[in-house]
Amino acid sequence: MTDPTTDHKTMAQLLQQGLFHHRQGQIPQAMERYGEVLQKDPKNADALYYVAVVACQEGQFKQGVDLVRRALSLVPPEARMLNLLGQALDRLGQPLEAVKALDQAIALDPKLAAAHANRANIMIDAGLPAEALKSFDKALELAPDSPLELINRGGLLQSAGRRDDALKDFDRAIALSPDVAEVHANRGSVLCEMALLELAGGRGDPAGLDEAVASYTRAIKLKRSLHEAYVARGRIKLMRGDWPPGFADLEHRFELTGPDYKPPLPDTRWDGTAPRAGERLVLVADQDFADVIQFARFAPMLAAQGHDVVVLAHKSMAPLLSTLKGVTVVSNVADLESKRPLRWLPLASVPAVLMTTPETLPREPYLSADPARVAAFADKLGEAPFRIGIVWDGTDNPHSNIPLTAFKDIAALPGVELIALQKGQPVQDIRGVAFRDKIRTIDADTNADSDFFLDTAAVISQLDLVIGPDTPVVHLAGALGRPVFTAVPAIADWRWMLQRDDSPWYPGLRVFRQDGTQSWGSVFARMAAAVSEKLK
Image 1 (tube, helix red, strand yellow):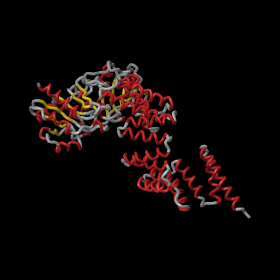
Image 2 (cartoon, one colour):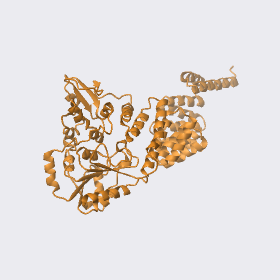
Image 3 (cartoon, rainbow, N blue to C red):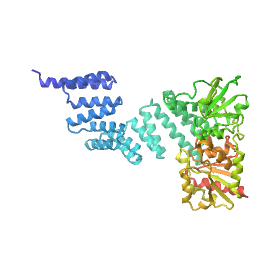
């Protein structure tokens, strides 16, 4: 006859052995022990829970949910089980059910830090940062030495603009776990933002970015595959005018697309060497519209050097890019002649290969408007003393989008007519501003598949000035050689560099930067004054 006490001790020992292997990362051995327990006692809630933990660790969240629910059906509710259930439900895309489980766990054990932390992460995904912060604060009150929660809370604080507090969390996390590359990268990000805001406010100097670069470099040394850190470090170098190493770092952007990324063409990448007889150089326009317009300047330059340049671009961009001198533009790989040898390169990678500097950058206008369209829009526009094309929305960075009301002082200037170059839903903003009668809309680029940007280029050629944030329209005006005022946030993109009111990319462009308040009011007051000077 089996002694129940001995049998119970054996199962407890098996569970302990399983946990030992589990903690050592020896999952097969752990599962073997848990399996032995369940073979003897299929209703052992502890063993079911530990198997559920393994399932979730291996990404089998549906199985994990089923197992932990079986465990919960066998014993009174336990906080640890409900915490695991909440995590797994969240990963299965059921955040409401996940929060219910986590709230039950917290009700059973208010001191379970992991449940508060898991709840915080769900609140972030739900767009409830204040709730997330409360949960992170509670988690760290209970477990102040948790590097992961310090990192996560630091990221939340940074996104909320509390950069000093975020830096404290990142520094604390580094003190606890100095070899975690990602936290050094996060530290570099917040240091970069702080330095840029100080510069915008007239404090500090560009050397304040040195520490940010050092943090990214430490992250890279700890984890050579942390490509985000290379790209972020490269952007700082580009801001500071250190372009060759900056563009080299930026090349790591291709590694961010994941393991399924495939080069656009199977042929050899161009390495910057001289043209070869009979060979085509295919430049792949693989980025967004603004970047394609910005980097298209290199195509005619390379054609002038003797390369047979072909730009492979989306069909919506092909008509505009066809105005590049000495360049062939195609929209499909099938349009490339298969019998001729070729080498290729992403369009935005050309400056890295050429080791371009601000001094060697091609700066002359390189796109042009179609004369027939120019004439047609000249008739439509008629006469006006001073026309300003405006655009206010359309970037991926919400800090770069501008409320249309910011243009009110410019609209109030005598003799000024505003021409809306904005596309899409934001055009509806015109109805809501007091100066709507000063804004004229133009029916341009209605067929994106056949003539995208060609009408806009023709309209811009008739304007005295274009004003807007970092959008394709601003880049188009610059590429056409037209006067442009660009409104730039305090935490600006690398292409606008540091503390400059001009741009090496476009000779006719003036940069108007936010100050440390990050308000558009002073930016547009300065713009209005500059326009007033032009009117004299």
